Length: 171
Length: 171
DNA sequence: ATTTTTTATTAAACACCGTTTAAATAAAGC
DNA sequence: GCTTTATTTAAACGGTGTTTAATAAAAAAT
Image 1 (cartoon, protein in one colour):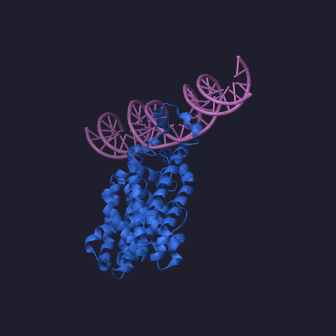
Image 2: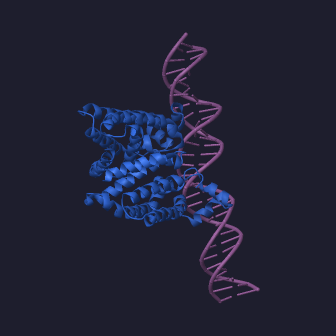
Image 3: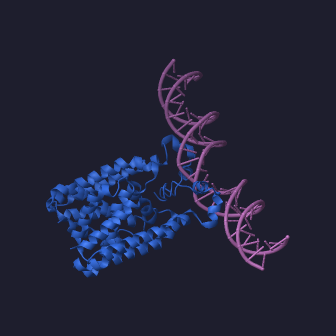
């Protein structure tokens, strides 16, 4: 989590643990497997975060949506390495592990958003697609700043603008 | 462009050319250099595309913005490998080559969008930031489908929804 | 307590990778 | 024809993810 997926080697990890490289392969089928074992926890963190936002938000609607969107962005930028591992890195091995977790995470996002969306969206038939493109929009924002040294607070205002743009587009 | 940056090796390229690997390093400082030499052309393609859209669009405004946004998405999905190389791959070496081209490309996007944006955006003070988050939103959409087998036509309707969401958010 | 069986670890090797180097070859200029 | 420049090459360096067969440790069974 310090060095990143590509810049850390199985040999390096083993050395730091005081084990031989081959030993890692007794416990993990491959490098991607080792890292995917860590992502499960990170996905849960995101799930819990969104759940908490929903439960602490007084009532569904525009305000809650804003909170959800901003929380998502905040999570990504305050856990850059996790976010990278969960959504961005597309190493051949990793994706087969994370793909289903990604889908589950998106469904969780959908679940958090749906109720509020239905209160402000006029065209209910497009709900699912709308949530999906919202998801992609947020991803676009996070994906960029994940690869930058800027913190969430550095771009908080911009994140707000981004979220407002999306929210206005929903009405 | 067939195999992708990571999955092709300098040795493999050399072999296919009938040269020795070392010969490539006479002409290119490193692998990233070789690939960045190809991206220049691709960036120009995108620049020209946007320029063409602007010049053939009768007058600035919402309709032209829609065309610009859809053209950007279309370019990404009809030139997936190029788009990857231009914007997505963050190999340590490549980024130092493409970063300035990326910035120039974004400026070109800004130039294409600005005039139309000013006709429908009420808060002119936020123009620059607005264009930036629009850019990120489009990137989010393209970035996902670039890593999927789906074509632009497969997701054309979704792209339209995405663009409409952004456009409504601007008014 | 001793043997057997399962679990865990290791050193060594395999097949790659990007890149560098020094020597050999080809081309160009005089 | 000779010298200089441009280009190519084989070989090596240090790295990567991963596999294998031998070994050591722990657990279970006798």
